Length: 247
Image (cartoon, rainbow, N blue to C red):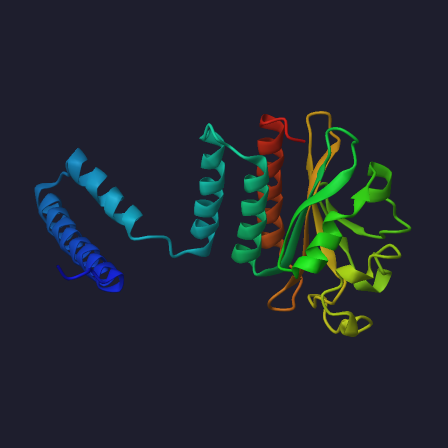
């Protein structure tokens, strides 16, 4: 018996799905034309059109972001919810959706109350392991002399390269050390050593953790829409960890 070729099977399945969608779309068009002439549509026709539109996939970027966020939220309904997996997937999505070069997520340890990096995306393993060895107290996290920053909102702070927002010994966290010291030519330029922290809070109003982003593939600082989106992802992450008492 001839073995099946997985690639051929995939192509055949894709063709069948596309042809089915075309047939259904044509049918819906005919139904709509007939319904317009009759002056009414049926509930079945409405439901079918919605299912077809849903199956066509997401094209608008805002809708893509919402789809990704919904997928993340639905994981909270699973009985086997894993906080570490949720944190990892949050970092992966932020990097992918918003073209962020590196994303690190730090969470307050429930035992010693220190903030520790739980995942790092976009950096070499050696550098990522270095991140995970760092710990901060709440006071260190907000220390303006060591980590000078500017408040964008209650949830977001921006750390700019000109202010040298790193403590001694953290030089390994630079992606491209040779670019340190370059001049910023426009208000939207992103420089090596720029980064942003998106804070998420617990019910007591204290900081549960933060999402740290650094660099973009367009070499520009995140725009306001991106900042708002990442703030939303941070809030969902905070709610998830609070729900599972993993903070």
